Length: 150
Image 1: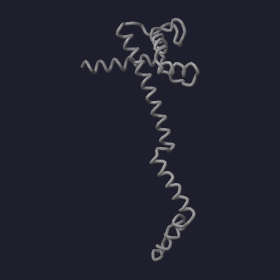
Image 2: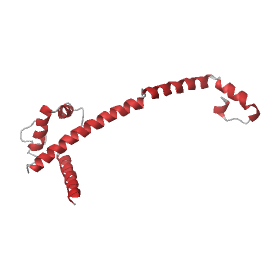
Image 3: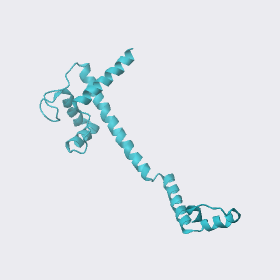
Image 4: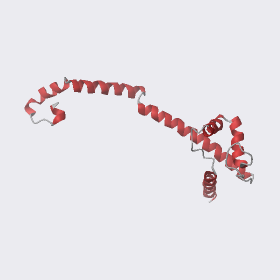
């Protein structure tokens, strides 16, 4: 405890102080905790590892969704089709080519099906299907094409 509380000035008796500290309940408890953490780190069973794993799954899911949305945008642009209709909501008439393509893809693609299910049951508020995101994705694609051409 002397190490923790204020340090040591008695260097002639340091060996006895260290031995005393090593046998103290606080030191033994800390050693057990440290060894358990060391084992969990080796086995990959830490909270951080689990959180990182969940974040990686989420990152992959969003990458898959955005990849599909970019492909839909490219497809509509190549055919010179309009994106939006008079409605901005999924599964409504006249919601435009972009949302209709998203709905169609969701019928056959589990990634988009899961994404639309999350939107409809309100488990996500970020869905990247709105008109502002469409415009931003179109602009990003346009900038990349210009870079490639120049």
